[in-house]
View (cartoon, rainbow, N blue to C red):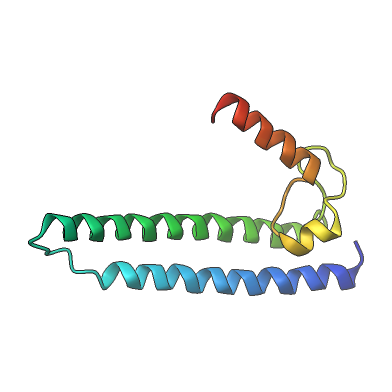
Amino acid sequence: MDKATQSYFKDLLLKRLKESHLKVEEAAAGLNDTDNNFPDPTDRATAESERNFILSMRERERDLIIKINEALQKIDDGDFGHCEECGDDIGIERLKRMPEASLCIECKRKQESAKRTTGT
């Protein structure tokens, strides 16, 4: 991958990293704004459901931040764009849609198929 392409993906990853940090901050603010002192059990259950949703969203964003940081490190190391499983190129179109991807589409399909088969 040439320097211009690496620079393009680094900029894209940094933009996504910033967006993910903002989402995590918003989720944390949403957790702090909630008042859990509801006399009605239905209102309490709704509030708890919303809290769990915010926590799961925050967890997904945290995982994405980790993947983005790993992709940025791969750019610095010169390993960006190569599948961790088979070593082939991931493909520019896949990276444009998901620059934090660490597997080529074929290896990702195999991984997802194995997960469905084993249920893990």
